[in-house]
Length: 467
Image 1 (cartoon, rainbow, N blue to C red):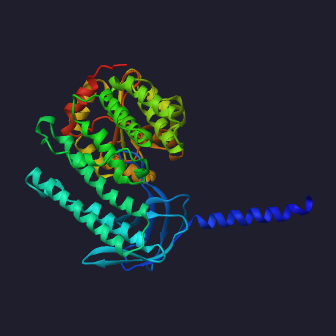
Image 2: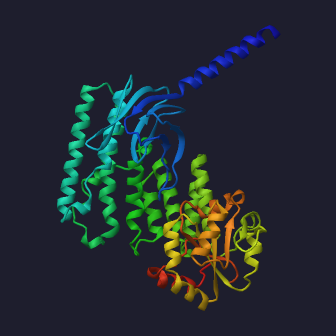
Image 3: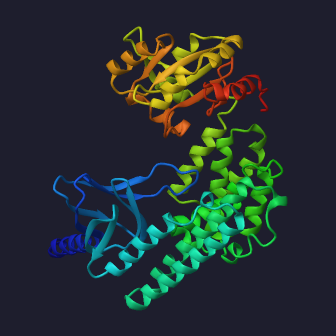
């Protein structure tokens, strides 16, 4: 038995290295645009509203030559980004190709050569087509727009069919390409319903869009299919007061099944958590319980837990983990304090927190236009605190002095902000929080302090907690 040990280990190592090589994707190419110094491969955020993309690989180059290698466990549609231009491409483990990026009349063109180049070149063209689909603002009449959109769809289908007849492509690739066009069309049709009242929608408006069924789980690989699900079952009801969360949830449960239903339900949770409305609590709990009962994978589970925590902190104190492990330094001192210690200085006062940075132009514009908001806050016995996300303390101090906002001014210790950022789903600033006089969360998405939002702010300050 001892004699067999080394050969077995060798065979296992050989198998592991072979499997790893089979999962490797290799792209090598040249970009003629000298301003492109990096190319990234990204995984798009799975849920809506859109969140951060996951970087799988970023390669830098000064001479325009790029070698991109990364591991991929299963076929997937990923984003190929060169500077500001993106293409959604259908990658498969083991692919090895060469590419070129050249300009044609000022527009970057991406082309591939290699064994599976026909699949990549097709998706390059499909990606361009979905991004250049007709937009409503280009037309005076709704009918003219929908007719043009239908013609665009038919043209793209004819092109894909002709391309497939001339190039070796498997049925799955053709299916995904055709449905990227189909569900781009569906999402554009349903997108308009957010701003149309039910009685103004033409009788046959949805006839063509509803031919494409949204119970095709294998199409969840397509961002166009996922966005169509979101538009049809959630976003279209955002501005409809008659459609509460319970009706939206029931509609999802009734008309969808499988992973498509799970995806729509998760997006329903995320959408209504953003609304921060206490009256939605019972249905959100029902939607969450259903989601957990489906034994979600790690991506879904993380998304569900983050949203559950974010919503159920409403009208409650911030979690102890956040209060005791988030550290900030005041402008007038060098000693760090916990968030709990800072809030304790403002007993029996409401708190409005402004998350800003010296480099953030919209933040500083809001600060410059916050005079009326500050008066309203003061009259309601709320204090205005500034929490800077700057990483350079000197730049932060100079900006604070320049903008005359030295009072109640703090900067985060960035080694301690991961829990705080996760709770808030903090992806961009400016961002505002509102705590009541017991320092319970009134909203994690407070109105901005500029002149256009003062009435909304006044209403939020006087709102009675519903929990």
